[in-house]
Length: 95
Image 1: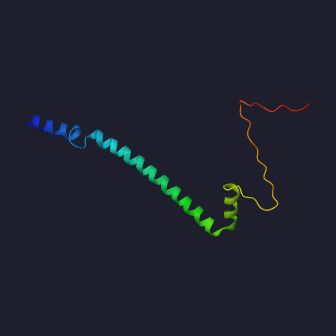
Image 2 (image 1 turned 90 degrees about the vertical axis):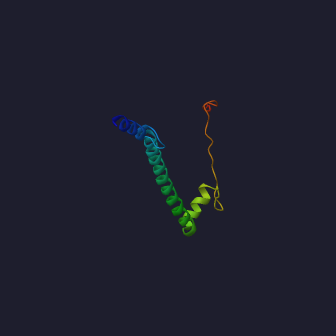
Image 3 (image 1 turned 60 degrees about the vertical axis):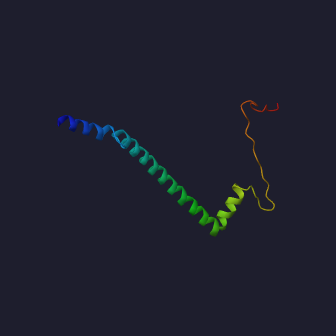
């Protein structure tokens, strides 16, 4: 009788479809998925707010056109700076 209880306890903890280790791993996986879901909800809300502002705010549309598309107004001049790589070194100053 005692042997049967020990065997049943062992099977309940370490055997079967969901052992203690499986349950622990599933809890960790669930926690990671909940964190991922929370970050995706925040990202979705942020994108929804951005979409709303682009639909209704002319300044947001202009900012998007300037920053993302590189558009300028008539009469403006675009000045672009190219970073100097380490291989190129610094430019020499004329004396």
